Length: 362
Image 1: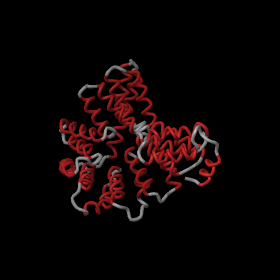
Image 2: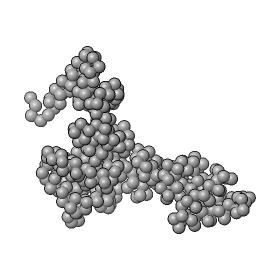
Image 3: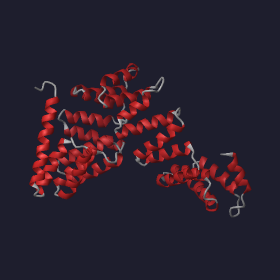
């Protein structure tokens, strides 16, 4: 703890029957021994008299986080940072955001910490993981490509991002050391993901099945295995895979989204929306999820809600062909024939443009 802070405490009057330094010493010892609730009481006792002490606020935040009370921890970390900029407190804040699935806020906070401590490997790794979970593959690539002598973990994330970004050949070069390190679940997951990207569906299923056998607890392994099974026309097995992923990680974006789609196809709209809502919690504002929600709402007769959301989506992604198709349906149901016809014309134009750039098009 900062020397000035200790000096200040010794100069303070008593806090009840005990001095602030006595309370602080006790609180620190309680926190270190895992007795978070008692530590929290002591920190708050100090802050009643001296609310502007940033280090105590930070310690209180850490104790709250240790007891799983992340929302309160976030409040205390922010109050501490408003009094004193501190990269370690900011990192703790980012971790609290991460634990509460506020991945965008976690990423934004980690960007600030990375600027303050560019050599901090924990920050780089956590930021890359946030970007991967948010689907920001290009940001992962930008962040990790300059890393000198990357370990296998960094290679794994960078290779994953490159492959998911469609840069399969570059991704294969990056992950080659992982593949040479022996047959592992991580290597099989990357190979399966690569084959899935290049539409080698049977090969993808084979590799991903092996990844599951080698390490069924590997993050995302069941999500990609389920996606491969779904692509080969086996929705029943795919659903089982997504359910296993969600049992391991209830916050898996891919598994929540895919389960919602399968339930929507089964016309189980209420449960589909639960999965879509959770996917949107993981990736706020994701256009694909918002589209699925709008399409589901349209299917159950919530036409106005669906139409408004589809209009908002198309302002952000005007070439989203499927959204134009669904919006046309919404307009027709609202008896807005001219608007529906306009959307159909847009679909025809977008399809023609797509056909023109496909290989072999005349």
